[in-house]
Image 1 (cartoon, helix red, strand yellow):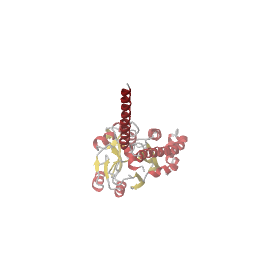
Image 2 (cartoon, one colour; image 1 turned 30 degrees about the vertical axis):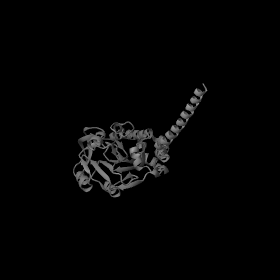
Image 3 (cartoon, helix red, strand yellow; image 1 turned 180 degrees about the horizontal axis):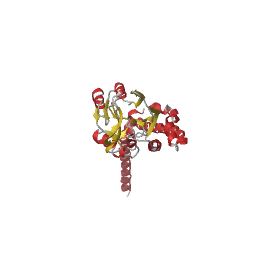
Image 4 (cartoon, one colour; image 1 turned 90 degrees about the vertical axis):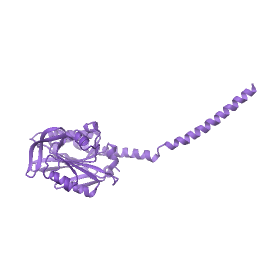
Length: 312
């Protein structure tokens, strides 16, 4: 009986020793697979930076727009002036924003942190003017340029031969089919029925791109159909296409006087505020003859494919 008890105790001691050795080795081995603290903190810092940028944008924009949101006319004409104090928030210091001027305006670009990045740039509405694209190319040569315009004369030659990009004979908008377009020609603007192609299809199936780094739009009131696609769970999300930054002109009264575009513009701005995907920077109000329009620079601060490129 004593022998059996001694053997049992010896067995327990031996088992305990093996268990302690095993647990020590397992702990040492598993520690090799833990993410370094710096990696985890870097990811969190990036997420915090993105949310801080949007929060600063919203905290500045929304209170300034609330007093005018119910008056479409005032909202349209006073939007840029009402929000001018929001253009240089300290949270925007994490973006390297540079100017690229063309004949009558300034485009803005959030430059990538890494100069080795190959970027995709799309111009919708070339309008016989590629000066801003040439400025961008001089500042950052690693850009693939794609331009679409229903007016082939002048635009094709400029975009392909002078810029070195690819030209597409389309009016890109929110719909596919024959639609009205205001086309810039050598004789000025004309109203024509032209071949339109949906933006989501154009980016995904014609350009074969899942990320558009830079999008410039001056498409005479057809911008609204495209901008409807950029929000969370919109058509572009559904086909897995990310738009990182946009320069856009918002137009009204192109096809006749109407309040529809002013409402679309107001609703777009509030959708941006509610959606938390983009911020709006550097808006300005401009006039061409008797027509007024709003220009703005819009930056994606939600999709990692974009923010990892340009948020410090």
